[in-house]
Structures are given as structure tokens and as C-alpha cells.
Amino acid sequence: MTSTLPTLPTPASDGLAVVLGGSGGIGAALVAQLQAQGVEVLALGRRTQPALDYTDEASIAACAQHVADRLALTGLPLQRLIVATGFLHGDTASGQRAEPERSWQHLNTDALQHSFLINAIGPALVMRHFLPLLPRQGRCVAAFLSARVGSIGDNRLGGWYGYRASKAALNQLAHSAAIELARRNRQALCVVLHPGTVDTTLSQPFAKTGLDVRPPNVAAQELLQVMDTLPEGSNGGFFDHHGTSVPW
Ligand SMILES: NC(=O)c1ccc[n+]([C@@H]2O[C@H](COP(=O)([O-])OP(=O)(O)OC[C@H]3O[C@@H](n4cnc5c(N)ncnc54)[C@H](OP(=O)(O)O)[C@@H]3O)[C@@H](O)[C@H]2O)c1
Image (tube, rainbow, N blue to C red; front, side, top):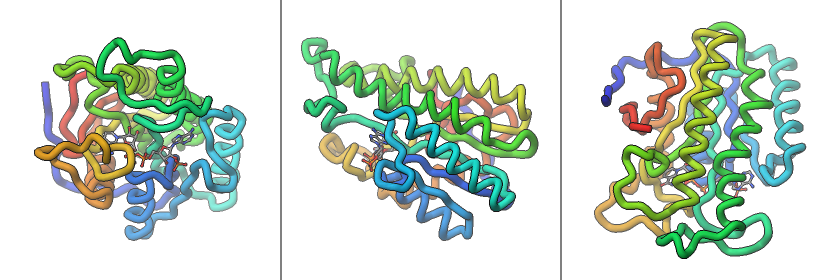
């Protein structure tokens, strides 16, 4: 069943926005868009101080402490937590090259481990360390960027085993976290979002003609609009950049 969200904006009140992966294609556009809206934003990534690197679990805890310190200093609530990290192709933690698998013949331990580390395990540890920083009352949103190809129900082409499977794992992790989060704050939302195909280094080698490839600033505007207009009952859901629910 699909549903389209209402267009009425319900802007979040003043608060801090944290973007993890703030130097990525979509992450940087989200930071710029939030700043343009006058929102106070904290961007964290592998090149920030402190650095956030999913290959180093302690860095995730250190970044969460950095955010906690900022919240205490400013008295602001953590209104938006956006996790814009992800891995599709490139160098793995062990320095080997990984590309999306076109066949089961291409499956290998190193690439699978790295996909799961960056797309599922890192975000899971973000849930552990950052979700407790969300306010105990009032609306707040934790959004994890996933991908429609992580949908099992929508998988008609196969391939991209590691990316698809690690995003499906992320979806399940976020859904469980949403249930736990609701016990702390019934107005808090934890969702997974599909940004659509966006012109970044992640998608560039695979963006075929005919696909609706959008610039990062457009994707960022759409994602923020979706986050700000998610209606009650959206907690634990999987939505695309139009706010339409995606099958699991
Ligand atoms: N672009 C698309 O068409 C598309 C479509 C569907 C879903 N998505 C999803 O949207 C999200 C953002 O994608 P994007 O297109 O903006 O990709 P991107 O430009 O490649 O950005 C990926 C981000 O992940 C971070 N990252 C990679 N390895 C990391 C590690 N070990 N520790 C911490 N951070 C790490 C990168 O940090 P550095 O800057 O330090 O490398 C970067 O900030 C991803 O979850 C992706 O799967 C994108």
C-alpha cells in the first residue's frame, strides 16, 4: 500500500540539526539547505574534528559526546539527526576495490563486510550513541538515508547483492530502533528515506540515461520537506523523496 504525504509544511521548531556524512554529495547539500533555512547545523564526517569513521567504533561515541556537549552548551534540543553516510563502490577498509556485484560469482567477503560495515553496522552504532540524545518530548526526526534497491519487495533486477542486502539490514535496524524510540517519546520519528537518484560520486558510474537524476540541492530540499511533513504514524517507515512509502 502506498500513501502520499500532505503538502502542508509543519516546520520543526528551533533546534540543532546534526548531519552525519556531511561532506558527501547529499550530506553537504543537506547542510547547505539547513543553513539557508537559518537552522543551526553540526556536520560530522571523516574529515571533521572530531572525526566520524565507521571503521573506528570509538569515533562514533566521541562524536556523540561532542553533540551532547553542544546540546548542553546551547540548551537546544536535537531536532533532526540525518545519517547521510553510505557505500556503493570504492576502496574497502582493507584497501581492496569493491564494485556492485552483477552476479553471485562476484560475491566476496571483503566487499560484503565493507558494505555491511558502512551501510548497516555504522548506522546501528549511530543509533546506539545518538538516539539517546533526542529529546524526550516534542517532535524530532532521525532519518537514515537508505535506498529503494534495499527493498526486497521492489527487487526485480537482482544484482548489487552487498548494497541491497546491507540497506535491507539498515531498514530493519531503523525499524527496530523506531519501536524502542517511541517508548521514550511518542512524537519522535525514526525513518529511512530513499533520496531518489542523485548526481553524486556514489551514483555517477551507474546513472544511466533515462533515469531521473537530480542535483543534490534538489534532493536535499525534497528530503527536508519530507522530514518536516511526515504525519503522525510515520515512525518506523520507509519513504521516498516524495514522501511516498516504499515497500520493505
Ligand atoms: N546518490 C544516489 O543516487 C543515491 C541513491 C539512493 C540512495 N543513496 C544513499 O544516500 C546516502 C548518501 O549518498 P551520496 O550519494 O551522498 O554518496 P557520497 O557522496 O558517496 O557520500 C557518502 C558519505 O558516506 C561517508 N562515508 C563513507 N565511508 C565512511 C566511513 N568509513 N565512515 C563514515 N562515513 C563514511 C562519506 O564520507 P567522506 O566524505 O569522508 O568520504 C560521505 O560523506 C547513502 O546512504 C546512499 O546509499 C544515494
